[in-house]
Amino acid sequence: MRILILGGGAVGTLVARRLIREKNEVVIVEDSEERCVELEEILDAKIIRGSASSIRVLKKAGLGEAEMLIAVTNSDEANLLGCLIAQVHSEIKIKVARLRTHEVDHWQSICSSDILNIDLVIHPDRETADRILRVVGLPGISEILDFAEGRVKLIGTNVTQDSWVVGKSMADLEKYGPPKNSLVAMVFRGQQVIVPRGEDRLRVGDHVYIVLPADKMSETLEFMGIPEASRVKRVFIVGGKQIGIEVALQLEEMDVQVKLFERDLARCEKISGLVETTVVVHADGSDQQTLVEENIEGIDAFLALTGDDEENIIASLLAKRVGARKAIALVNRLDFVPMAQLLGINSIFSSRLVVVDRILQFVRKGHVLSVTTLREEEAEAIELVATPGARFLGKQLKDLHLPRGAIVGAIVRPSGKVIIPRGDAIIQAGDRVIFFCLENLVPELEAAFIGDLERGKA
Image 1 (cartoon, rainbow, N blue to C red):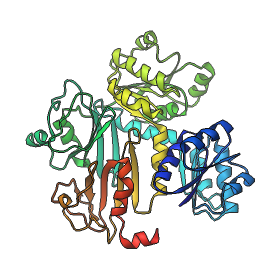
Image 2 (image 1 turned 30 degrees about the vertical axis):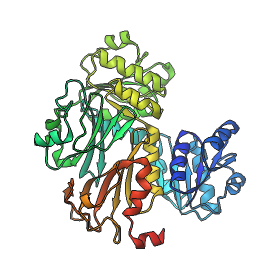
Image 3 (image 1 turned 180 degrees about the horizontal axis):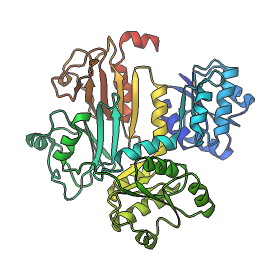
Image 4 (image 1 turned 135 degrees about the vertical axis):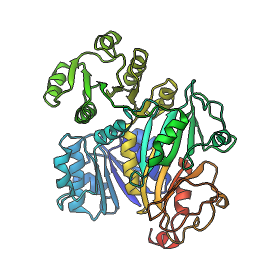
């Protein structure tokens, strides 16, 4: 597929790297000469220097031959103009745009109209806020991801020093009688990614992902010794950028007492006009004395959502030390994520990865329903539909000889029945299959689930 990416920043680079690995032809339009030089050094892609809102530049980049446009510059205006140019001057079938404006709801109808005909509008702050709010009241859970319209969940948790599962192998856990329909799908240990087998043991500091049906959540949390959700009453937010405001507004709707800390006085005044019950504090939310004076001890969650990764990590560690039950940090530098987890921060989210996930779902074949990147692009959770003629149909899982580093985590029948499979399970045509694998195995496994007819259309 020929794909034109507008914007060679962090998101554009992440998307391009993945698309190139999957044998797509990628062209990137980037305005910065310095950044163009960097991109040419790290990517096997054609780099065009110029404005994403220039008709001449986009035609030079191959607008007429492109099959998909991904607009992820740092300017909403440039992203929208790029899509408008593509609508008028090309026959591009799929257009994706990232918009950061707080007026995104008003823009949705315009973007989907015949004027722009944008297939997907991504608002990174809102999508990241949604992920944060799923876990804000669960101190022991780092992340909750939904599949099959919420019928299947993937929960992440950190193995702590006092956890009873420390030193237990997968076989040992089976002997203790876990919920039958649950499975440890992946373990992240430092820089290592493990798809666990029976003999693999859990260690302190491991980040574990468990797949389960939605109705087994309470049972699974109890088995793992993780406290269940409690009503969230008090939350501190550090950072008055749009994501901080978005989270505060949603917490207000949940009747949560929120304090939002922002160092810029003018920004504080602006935020005060947008929120209703949130208390806006003009102060440094990473200062220990300030947090103690504002009564941080015992708060349900501390959310570090500034634009500075290092500040978010340090503030989260401080908040845990002075009494916050849960600390959540926004960390966009992917190489910081393993370190932040080892330091004991409960949850780490990246707006960049949220955008990448949504884009990859659109780029891949129609049978792929969802794509979720796990940690530093090291692994993925893929939800797809098994098509007639796929190689994996009609065989027991134990006979499929999946590559090491891959596991089928869940099967959802067309009837809605959820199966967390063991070796004797069989995949049927029409099943939703959720598998977890190392990133380099994704193309091989996706191909195995596409029938001959589907391949012929690609």
